[in-house]
Length: 346
Image 1 (cartoon, rainbow, N blue to C red):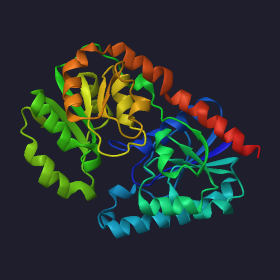
Image 2 (image 1 turned 120 degrees about the horizontal axis):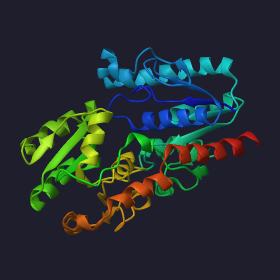
Image 3 (image 1 turned 135 degrees about the vertical axis):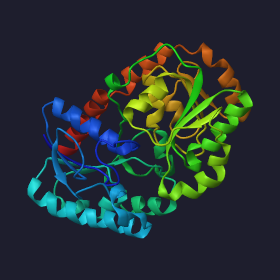
């Protein structure tokens, strides 16, 4: 098949540091090429891929100085959509896979080929629900079953779990005695709660996280004062090598999420290294983490603290096997191919 992948412009594909959607797009492109398909990637020009790269911008938006203004940043996204429309005229694919989200939906009827949208974010944001509701007949893919609940009437063609290249996450049965936090320094990811749990439990916490422009004030006022450099250590935003080192040497990943997590790639990355996950029962958590087997999915602070005490009961090899059997990039690609084939014959 001739497949076009539309990636967000915020980060390159793959992201050099933080960027979940862009990493998923990269893994999907690579696996589809391995399966013999012709893949075109419309993304920022600083992307690195074996797919046929068609640049939408020369560099990812995050690197553009003018994008510090959030209104300009949003305007650039619409400019990118216009560029995509022009580029698609000449490509004539069999299928278009949209990872950009709702901004592409008003234009999908103009493509004359199937265009499927993977929903990478939560569906309980009011303005996004309004837009998705307007285009509810368009084909959608959810990345967890729980993600669907705020908008059950969308035309879901499948649930396809995100996948990682498991070979890039070496397994370790040993730890260095600390707990880890990975993600964004944003309220929904729960960094303040992670620090609180670590301090009450008396354990060391090493944190690696991106501080988005929208989260600077939150980080400076609520998180940074809690970081002492001894019990609570902050590494900043890290690349793949340091991320893997952080995860594989951790006793567990502390993920006290405060929102409806659509998938949680960091759950899977930790488990691939053999590191169990302790998280709250929100969003996709119970679909990804097998409680009592690859970590603990809890509902209260007391249960969270008790899980820290009980984490030694988890066999790290079970964590690895869960990812290999359910969340590999190869499995993800095969599941997406079924979606493409189903839409292409209509």
